[in-house]
Length: 588
Image (cartoon, rainbow, N blue to C red; front, side):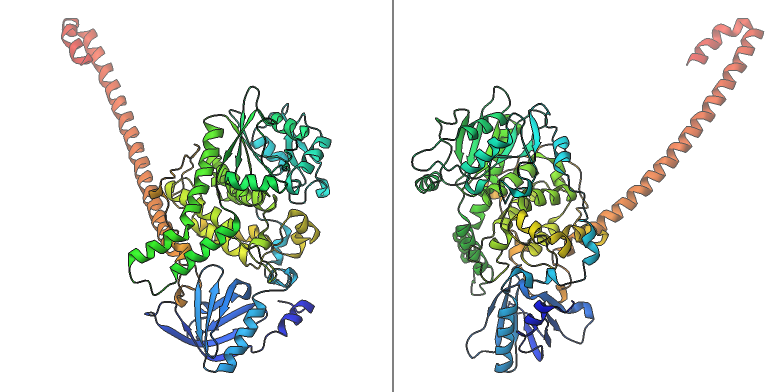
């Protein structure tokens, strides 16, 4: 880190930088405690035993801390992390404990985004020249999706975010729809998020669209431009479906407040369906209940644990998302029916569904590069409010694990189709962690306009560049990957959805701190895969050698047979009376 004004301001909040004789207690009562020294810097909390190798130190960003808990008069501090680990520190003196708590409470919750480590760390500066991946441009997506040029075009109507701040500057729209029409449609949609193409089926021309709710209101207003745009997206002689992510009664409530859903009389070519998904606030409450159950050491029976898990309703949210993505996949692939997905704002559940549906529909999205491009395109470029939902500053109130729910549903798909993904679950852990706390600026701010105004590409390093390094790629690759070019049809049965244990049931183990505990099994698979590949190469070399020897032997046999044949012919000419005797022998 280099010293600037922001860092000097943060350093003033460090009331005690070094504390000796601190005990790190594991969250489970039967595990051992480790004694060491606690160090607090501007951006990092470091715990070191000073008796082990340097790589065994516990080093975490302050912004990785979700809550600092300490009872009055106690010297025990509990740190709840945003990646669901929990650390318990026991200090020797009450004054030291109070200073540590005060320091961590302030440093873990910045006043503004400019205080974050991503703006002030030099470790990734060499990464700022590129993003590490060649994510497809809109022109390249247009070609890869095989969009008919007579049907679709690339519009620059949102240049400098003139129409919508939470949309990219270039969008694919029907060719018959003018930019003036797009402006009228944007004014008719919540947050000006007009219907936008996010996937085109290359064989049946069905499309996947996203938007926000129409502003129909209690008077059921109609926008002819909006109707014209949606109908222009449909292939000829076909009908489409609108998947409203909200429950039907919630959509009606929004209608009374100025929002609403597409009226059947105004959109006769579209049929409205409801996914019945819950709002972000409910999902946040569900996650809190789940984590409370995961770390409740008082649970003494499996029945109590499963009751707590069921009452949290977390797996119910995952199931609803899987069902919605399956519905979209079947509509587009089997029924050749186009689908428009939207909720109220179109920035949360809508992005979950469109992203997961593309993973099921498009094999490219199941590769590492394709999946990261999907996250960039659907979540970052299309305005999911990461800083708002992930509480990047202390002033955030609308926190919700929307992105985590998507990752969880994707993990469920990876369980069912383990060979169809080039990446393993470690990549999902990395994305979850860096979307909450990171030395990179990729997930900062809420809209693409804010990131452009703040010049994040030049002021911070990119997570994609970090992920493109060979050492990280080695960790996130699935050694069992075999490309599956087919569309994935998932099971949404209750028995097919299970708790993601390596995400939610994490513990504090100082020996496992340098690496994620999910790595061990993956590394074993990679080692086994390497050994099997070496064995396969040896078998192939032996087979090639055996085939070469066989070809050589066959050639020698043919040559010998030919010489025998010539000799027999000479005998026949010399002794014609034996020819009738030699013919059966020769042909046999």
